Length: 109
Length: 119
Image (tube, rainbow over all chains, first blue to last red; front, side, top):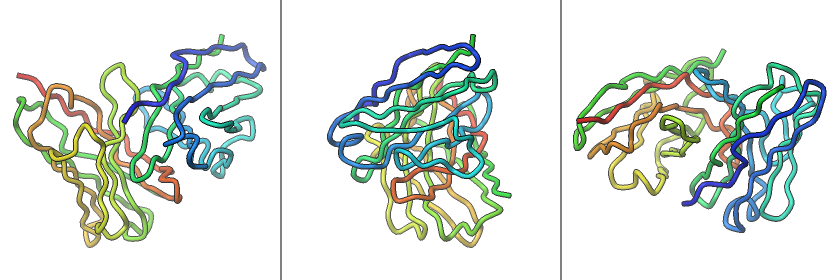
């Protein structure tokens, strides 16, 4: 049950776009269209921002978008804002279990 | 509004047991699967266990299989996690979360409860 691979950190300036990758295997990311992304501000509850690879829950700005190619999923945040600074965790269903990524810290410069 | 409130976190010695609770409100608890996820200090999220809406199906992460038991009482709108044979590496903040999609995405999370395993 290996963790999905994410970059440890990414950064961008306000208004720019950043993309966070999440690499798994054909047993998880590549095998199901069930990748989700969570935004997590330290000390708070994680918030779902993308589910089923590309879907956004109501209330999540369309600046957040998701995609997938083979065994790698990606989260793109466009028009970066200061409040986007947080940890981002990818997650994939994997045949009766769930695998999370190691988490990516986004810094807004 | 949906609320999930975890409780039961404590400092315990290795080998001991602890039971966490998660009180749910603001939605029809018996209609949704639930899960526990944890985060050790300085680490990423780690999936612990999940249960179907009626508690008949239960799933566990490899690191807790055989030691932890997930359960629920739909009459009390409460999710539980019985943690046995605790190890130092079980030290983490434990979150309960409500599942809402086929792919086990969690649309609501609690604030978490801290479990520290230390001698």
